[in-house]
Amino acid sequence: MNDGLTGALTAGWRIPAYAQDMLWLETMFECVQTQGEHGAFALRQPAELVTLRWGGAQGSALARLTWRADSLAWDGRIGVGGYVDTLHMTAIDDDDGAIGLVVLTVGGMPLQPGGMPFPRAGQRHAVPYPFPSFRERLCEDIEETITTWIALEDSPALTLAQDALVSKLRVYVFGRLADEGSSWDRALALPLLLESMTVFAP
Image (cartoon, rainbow, N blue to C red; front, side, top):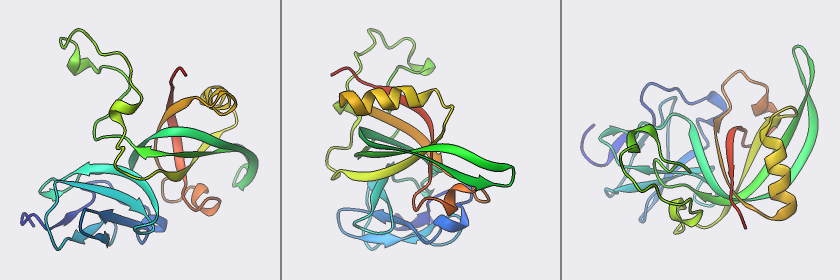
């Protein structure tokens, strides 16, 4: 498939069934739907960067991906920078009873590929380390969209999220699509599991 136009969104990771008809790839020229458990796609014109969207050209922007031959190697992980707009507390029924959870609505933009809020181990010798910059890692050419994030009620990230909401602080949120077979896809249209969060000073 190494023709610069066709490929797959994922390699080894399988897209959950509930998401298989919801993922689209947007370029400067078009927006195409992916197909199947690995997100097969075909473009009409080559592109160095693609934007992964949920539900179509007007849907939530989930990730900015760099072109790779055969597979874009996406694994369901998502990183977004923006503001926490709402916190909603609720409970849903699970096999073991009711589970308390919080749904965060975040208005923002995807982070650039590989974007992290701190130097990684592989960057140990790249001194001096840069000061954290909220805008530096944002894909600011993508219009702001809404994403919804799930956290259990005892998640330590919720204290940060509440502070960010009340004080209107900028955040990075990191996580992934909920797995197939979880109950989250029955509760939310876009179930993203919150794994970590960065809060920036005003």
